[in-house]
Image 1: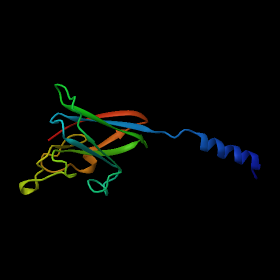
Image 2: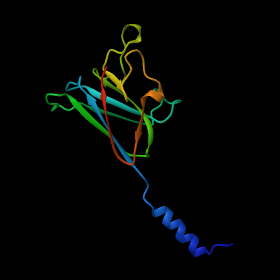
Image 3: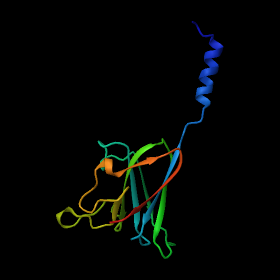
Amino acid sequence: MQVPSNALILATGLLLAAPATAATLAVEVGSDLKAGDHIAVALYQDEASWLNKAFRASRVPVSEALGPTPRQTLSFADLPPGRYAVAVYVDRNGNGRLDRGMFGIPSEPYGFSNGGGRFGPPDFDAALIDVVDGDTAIRIELN
C-alpha cells in the first residue's frame, strides 16, 4: 500500500513536533563544605565510562551563604530519562582534580550516588540511580 505524500509529510511533522522527554537531576552535596571550595560532579551512563569519561559534568564554587548545615545543590537539566551513576568531589585547593595522599587515599572530600567509597569506589551497578521524566533529587554524603 502506498501512502499519499501529504500524509507522510503530516506524520513526519507530527513526530518532529512531539516534545522530547527530559529529566532534571538535582544533586545535593554536603556537609563538609567551606566557602572557597569547588564542587565537581560527574554523571556516567555506562560501566565502560565509569570514573573515566563523564556523560555530563559540572564544577561550581561553593556558595558563601552556606548556613548551619553546609550543603549545596547542583542541577543537570535536559537529561534523557534513564540510569546514571554519580561521582562528586570537593576541590579544596582549586587544582581541578581529586588529590590523593599516601597509598592513593583521597585527601579531599568525595562521594558517590547510593553511598559507598570508603574502601575504594563502588562498582558502577552499586552507584546506579534512576532518573525519571521530570525532576529527580539525590543527596550525596561526603567521605
